[in-house]
Image 1 (cartoon, rainbow, N blue to C red):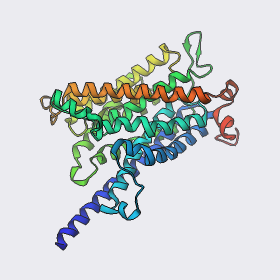
Image 2: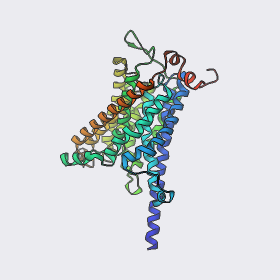
Image 3: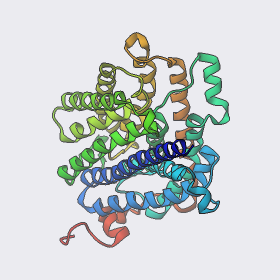
Image 4: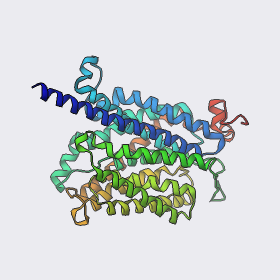
Length: 402
């Protein structure tokens, strides 16, 4: 009996440490979001980019701890600490891991709305998104809430499969961002006589640093989504690697060696592979990632040139929103055993589940940001935007010269 108890304790401790390492790796990805935005925006908005990411994480933690986690999973942490430490506190650390996913939503949105958004209204909107909109869909997919997954399985033989959040996290974040970007409108001076005016990134090294931090952390994002040691799979790691490389190389070619596209290409591939990384053959992951790299480059250029109101600074709608939806669909294609995958997935369920993610995210984003806009406004004044968010909001520039 003592041996059995010791083995159980060791297993619980190992699982807790495993998911804790994953949580820390995904937490580190938020530094990647920050530096990717810092490098992409103009100098006068660098401080604001850094401040938004870290404060968004703070309000996300509170919103998810007290409201969002309960909506998604029906659990809470308002009992005594003795209760919370059962199983080595695994549920607490699982919350930490899932929080880092939830907090990625406002981090994604931040890149789209950069350089012209007010501070506190957007912070309030982030809290509402993480408390209500994101966990509604998260619980529907990852906890079986509302019978949606059971219905898909009954109708099409398999539920919607999203192992690490191509749709649940990235797709939802990208489509929420689209709603916010459309409500904000374009930055001043971005379009002249119907033609887009290029705003050069302030720092390619910072942009590259952000992309690298995100890329490395992503292996915690994907591999640790198993949540226990006995579920870990080397297939997930190698599929993530191959999709990353596919996105990188295609973005290099399609983007004509542009460093912005080259460093975002791996991220597009990684977004796309999250859903089916535990199912696909590595060659399927390579193809899925390559297609995502092309989607990002061509859709970003098309949107920037054709839709004036869609001034998406970091291209988060094509990168996370559209590549995320592609990832959900790709899992239904390359996860099939006929294409070398493990099978057990339905393309129709993937299409319906991905579409549901778009609807929940875009409608939820429109509702939240429209309410905030009506109450307090979302956008800086023209003078504040001209001076830059750093000085207008934080009263300090990124360097002493400012």
